[in-house]
Length: 119
Image (cartoon, rainbow, N blue to C red; front, top):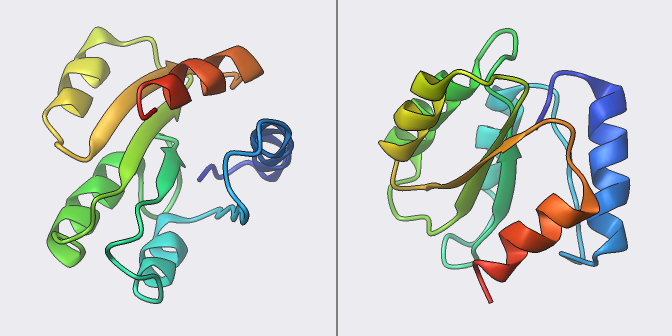
């Protein structure tokens, strides 16, 4: 999830190359993603790439709402951000649903390294 449609397109193509999932869906706003989660079986884990800096609902606000609205879900959320602030990394670690923090841009190598954590 990124507010930049070009980043979303590039990331979707990269994820498609590693065949990470049958269905890759991108969102420009966090509210849309939260609503979509209502329609997905909570026992089916999802890998979410989340940008911190987004309009309307930023990544931190998304994580708070996610925690409130979907406490039963077992998804893996990877923060994908241009932020190099160490405090952002520490804050990300305070969320049990966050399983990684990657700096933009996303690359095939970063995707593979992240996926190895779940194998």
